[in-house]
Length: 187
Length: 187
Image 1 (cartoon, rainbow over the protein chains, first blue to last red):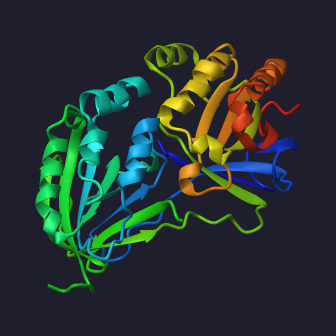
Image 2: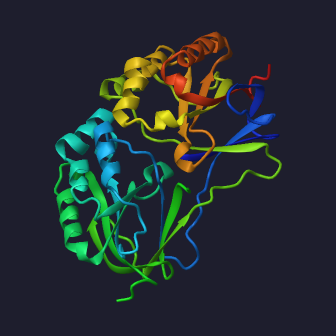
């Protein structure tokens, strides 16, 4: 089933608009009908091996004290000395997605210490999570890490600790891609 | 800042692949470089008034007992007699999005009884939530409801109760669009 939809207000569509009212803030221009159709995301460019798509979302599991600690310590992507990266796309099993929010949270942090493990490697390892599952993609998450060459050992240590958690037993597909930034600090 | 990205493995891009390893499940075909670019979602069709885009996601707040109760009672979209609908796009304030997961959950259910209110109107009012915020859209959610004409009063009652919750004080943009399905049961 498609997961991404466009609702277009105009002159066509199955649903006829019978009323439209601005409740709060800016309204929308008038429309006679609304059409609801699945969106096709941009295809892989010609000649490419594959394309993986993901969204930067809000933080889903971390609680107030953890967010404050993360914000205080983390650094952004694109630091001049962070010329090594890892792209690790992962998919979690149907058993994970059948869990409720409280159950996932319990495994994520209270059992697996996911946030605490990552925190120990801040700010040397910068991270960005992309969510893919809601786009109907083959992976659920694209995890992206950037670090300086001298922190490569610390990064291996971080990845090993994450793979050793209870949370990771729910990962049923994982590819580990390592990268070097080109055009700067050619070595 | 764009929120939706494509990571394409091929022959171009800033990042050179230095290694690629299948850890679990199916791998990916080889690539020399990875290009990371923002995705432009499909534009509004010519002649349309507007297009709102949204994703069907997993349930973010409900806990185990609530999910079981929802699944037992709710019915899907497209029921033959459900020829009335409401599309209510909403945006929540920056103050809402600055909250942590535990704080949002506390307002969502423990203070506002959002799930419990909706539950009382199942199965007569069918609902589908589309998430937009992660697509960089002007609204955060597209809420969609379908019901039979004889349940219109029950629907007004449901909407009034939701608008009266503490959660709704965080809604800073809201448009209320009512619809009738065409091509069936012409009245």
